[in-house]
Length: 127
Image (cartoon, rainbow, N blue to C red; front, side, top):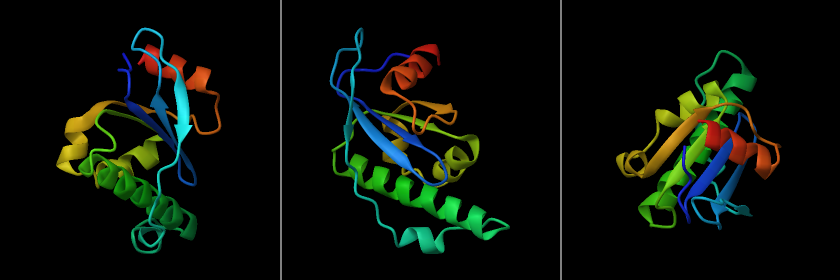
């Protein structure tokens, strides 16, 4: 998968997330970490899992999806790649706004939180 210049990459799992912007070119991408505020309130109400941990992870996924929706709707994010473990990705997909869906360059169901930007770029290139 190509990563257009200026596009964003979110890397998430059930407890954490990172947001990056491609400050390089499509041919030579370079990821720079950036901040995206989340609303912790949704984390308390969104879970529908069988255990408290599953509820917390579903709530975290909802919080990330909500923040991404807001960023896309306010034109802060125009193109987005979402990389998340399969469970988190499934929870996030349920909450994508149609505008976020239109901004998606691609999705990767893989756990890459805590990995280097080089590892993230390799996964994007191989997707």
